[in-house]
Length: 199
Image (cartoon, rainbow, N blue to C red; front, side, top):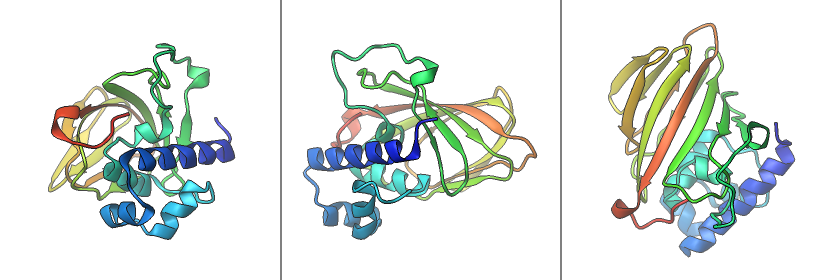
């Protein structure tokens, strides 16, 4: 797994770049996301270990997906192949869940793939509602089971189940089982439905 300091440095640079591309100030991003200016500043300096919930709020405010914060800037020279050994892996400091960016870094594509391993008893809440762009997501359970609450509706998902959704309301993931759950997340941002920057 990539060193935490290296990953913090990457997140810092990526967040600064995306904010600059959107023409947003620290105060503007704070107002849009509800994340304090001081917290955003700490993350942009690589001095904080933000949780998945905080990163999701920032991504939503910038019109990108959470996965895109771990990606590289798009490049026509980027390889379409992502070897497993080179895929960026990050652990949420709050829940302990692991997320692995599967898509080739920097290769332009409307689809992003992420593998998530959620430990037994883990809980991850994304309270982001409105986003600067429309994000479609599908979750396919590879191993184990999870409970996913989307707004007011709760789904119990077991191995082989696949759930499609739009990320436009609060979402809560829980693993009530005594073993880890592993699932694939596919994301696509609808460029026609929002004005925010894409991956």
